[in-house]
Length: 440
Image 1 (cartoon, helix red, strand yellow):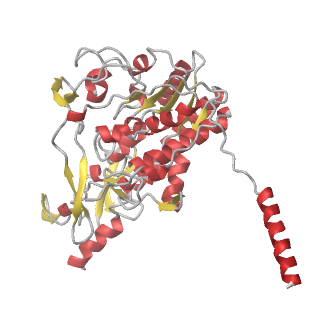
Image 2 (cartoon, rainbow, N blue to C red; image 1 turned 120 degrees about the vertical axis):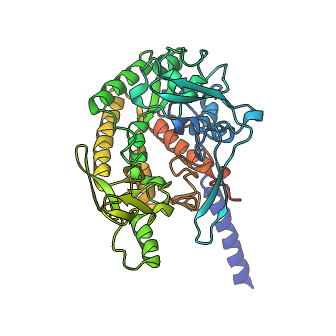
Image 3 (cartoon, helix red, strand yellow; image 1 turned 120 degrees about the horizontal axis):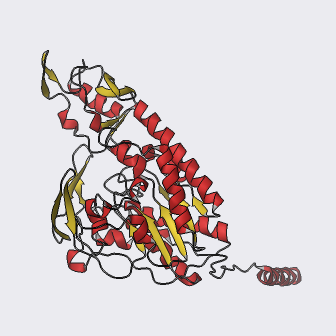
């Protein structure tokens, strides 16, 4: 009994000692370091605006990555952050896609939202086409994200007449606007900025299958990026920039695959040996050839067209199944187009990093980050996520833009880059508070 009492005494003393030595967890007090977050502005395209599910709408805007960053900055000296939100009664903005169910084969069924839109009309622009006009936004502005804009267009004065998302931010009506995007975003003083322009200079070419757009000239990109960053930092403002993602890292190009399409066709007709595409040879020369796994179909490729009869000089032949009826360029980014896009993106990113370094700016390497997610996935707060369409949790129903959860993840990467560069301690956001794709 005496030994037992001694054992208990020693145990209690040990526990008290352990308790006394228990390390305290200190959360750093939020600070701005050498930066000034009192007026933060965000410039960029659809990703910056909070575009999701194929449209711009209020819920997406509220979950934009700049809005999330600004919320976290408030504890470190950040000021108000105003976005050009659609009103509550026009909350569906441009319209967007919703997930309504799944087909027996597991493919998703989506439907467009067509009520409570913010469309005020259309404007015909000679030589360009019809521009959708949205309800005007007036008031202060911190989020200057404009869906569709390229770096190539930031100094083009008539651009406010050609892009309805930009037109809604300007006081004038299309076709009378003459304020360039660069003039617009720098009209008021700011202390800190984020910039994610440049994506569409490659993405628009890629998503059109190389058929509906062109890659921005490298020298033009370098000149305009230097002009942009020089202008943004002219009054001493600091900021963070992001690189252009690898276009092949998004589910828009990795969901409808050549092996899957060929396999489905062969189930119905085992004699079919190949799917044929019209592929880039060099320059502007295209020729039909059998598709390989290195060629990427776009997400919206209507696979029901495969095998449908097409009239040719050689008679009626099945679409996509002969060299005489190859799949149209607009539905596929072939291997040579991928290599061409990759070459341009690598140049764009080298330019971005070089200019950012010369101005002492923080850099979020979105190219490497999203490529790594495609290859390895990511675990966030114990939850495994990846770049798979719908199930991955990061990308929205359009296969290009992000879910609220995806935007929160990106916001944290921006914050990490800001903290590392400027010695700030802006707290990271709790990603678990943001949902992925909304299921029916």
